[in-house]
Length: 163
Image (cartoon, rainbow, N blue to C red; front, side, top):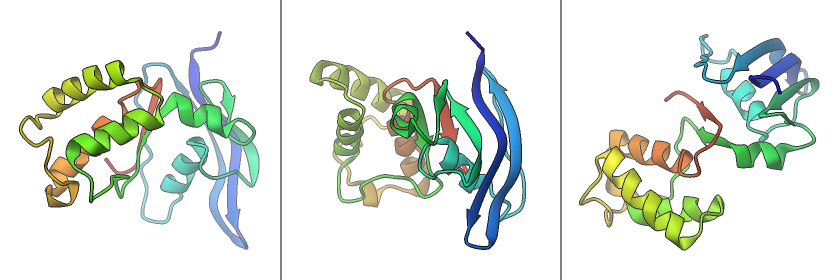
C-alpha cells in the first residue's frame, strides 16, 4: 500500500471561460504537512474544495486516502476533516450542540460522542463554555470550535482553508 494520501495529476477546474485551477500535480505522503501559498484568486481554496470532494475537477485526477475525488466523493468526505475559511458552525447552536451535530454527521454513537465531547472541550480550552451560543464566541474561540468539530471523527487527512 502506498504512503501517498493525497495525489493530484494535471488537475484543472474551470468555471465557464475562467480557469481557477490550472494543471496542478502534487503528492502528499502520510505524516507530511503541506501548504498552498499564493495570492488571493490563485486557486488555493478551489483546489482544497476539489480534494475534499466538494467540487468536481474539469479535468485531471485526484485521490485522497485512495478514493477518487470525482467518483468516490462521499468516501473522500468520510475519511477527511475539513475546516473552511468561513467556519462551518451553526451560530444559533451552543458549543456543545455544534459538537453533537458534527458527531452525528460523522456517525459517532452516543457513548463515543460523550467521550469525544469531553476531550474536545478539554483540549480546546472551552470548559465552562459548553452552553454558550456560538454566535457569542470571539473569532478565536469559533476557530477552536470549528477545528475541534473537523477532527471529532479522527480523520486520516485534515484540510484547513486559511486556518
